Length: 151
Image 1: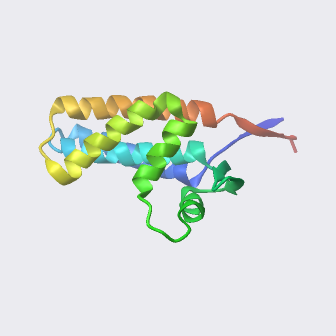
Image 2: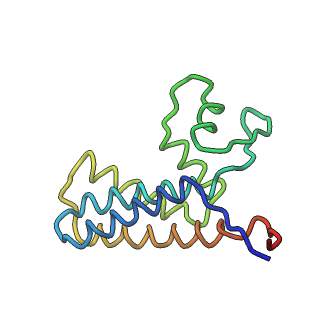
């Protein structure tokens, strides 16, 4: 018997961004981009863990296969901040990594919009939080979904 593990577009994207993050870190001069790619890698690890799933939306259970579907159902055409909505979901459904995700979100926001001259300490915090998020999301969510018979 072969065990099939869950893979997703989000997981592939997370791994791609994570690889870019680690390559940028080797250059030792783009702490802001290490932090930014760490956050966007974490965002996709989180999406991989969150979807597909059932969510309570406006008092009813609704199945969503991806974040875009969730935000569409949740917002009903009105603007809702995708980052704020995802952050709420992380604290609701993945509370063990909520503070790690929030830390990365805040560091990325600073690096992108306030001050690109980020410290080595900030970069190291971002890499540490990314490691926590990846370990949680991959270990928790890559469990076998089904067992397929050997052909």
